[in-house]
Image (cartoon, rainbow, N blue to C red; front, side):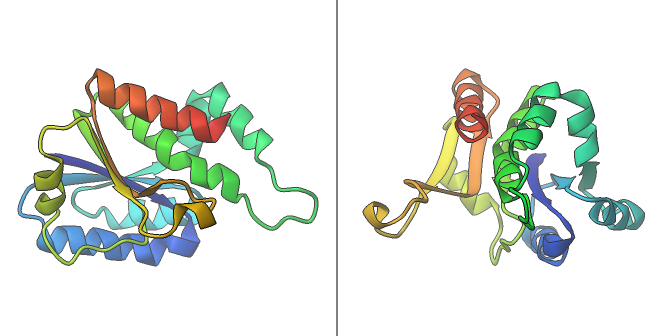
Length: 176
């Protein structure tokens, strides 16, 4: 069983459902998509539909379990007049990936909710093979961008020591 995860609020729910549909249609192997819902609306929609292989998790569950995450959210509040909380949301990919590994997943493949697949996801796993980490380099000039060296739209961690240390490093890098 493949363990996948994504996250979104209501603004990316349709894209997240398209991601789920592409996985359901094209994956030959069983998978579970743990979906971190960043608002009540997203959680209610996903929970109501009870989609096979999709596990909606409300952000409040993680916030209730972690003082560290609550403190991080408080540090990320938008400045006066700010309209969103992007910094907090962007940090959740690493946090949620580590959270799931710590809950006993053998591995986790994080996928941005606005990605869809046109071929079986097995191709990603064929590329990763038995490695502990799977990342994709950006395909733009790094020197002219603040985005960093790697694209985190799709990123893989095995639940071994190396994978867990790397996801923990990533989490710390975006939270502190």
